[in-house]
Amino acid sequence: MLKVEGLNVEVRGKQVLHDIDLDIPEGSTYVLFGPNGSGKSTLLATIMGFSQFEVTSGRIFFRGKDITDAPIDERARLGIGMLMQRPPNIPGVRLRSVLKATSGDGMDVERAAGELNMDSFLERDINVGFSGGELKRSEILQLQAQGPCFLMMDEPESGVDLVSIQVIGKKIRDLIGGIGCGSDGSGTIRSALIITHTGQILDFIEAQKAFVLANGTIQCSGSPDVMFERIRRHGYEECIRCHQRN
Picture 1: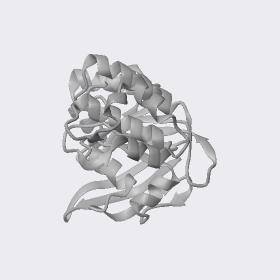
Picture 2: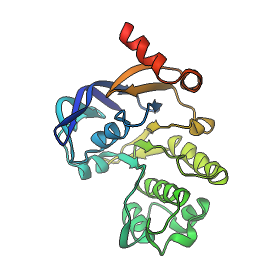
Picture 3: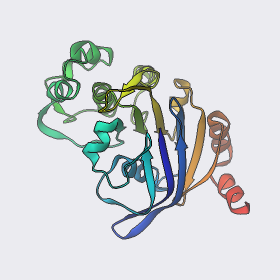
């Protein structure tokens, strides 16, 4: 589904990521751990194609196609979708309008919004005045409308209360377990890459592998539950020391 080879990325002339190798098969869910400022959000934004993140070397392949230099809209049409940690406010654009434009006739907007307790937000400007949990539900609703093959989520549980995390977690599980397709119309089992700090999302999804990203590079990988417990007990330093020894 996604293959990243030797990726090096700069932001405003400063190197943020170096020597990133990542291979996510179709139908797999991978989790990304790491301390604040380690480059996790930069990695997702680079894969999505945001212009301020400059790839200085390395390649990104999506479903066998080299997308390293592809614009963000082409990547979205191919089937890459992203839930941002801090999505922007979009005054003057109603949530219903975006959902209709994105899904066409492919989604019952009223029903989908109701499942996420967002039916009363359809006539509101996107993200304007939304709480943390409402922002996440809005982003998930937009991802559902897009129907991507590959889901990237940047801390989907951050700023979410204990009631909302149940709704959000179950919807994310349903999205990951579904069929997505790109612009060529060919269905495929979805894959996902999810950043988490709290580990709460692991209660709802079945992730196959986890990585720790620190100091701009992948330090170690392993079982998501085992790695999360190790990080919780010992912090990231143990993983970094192990990487340096090897």
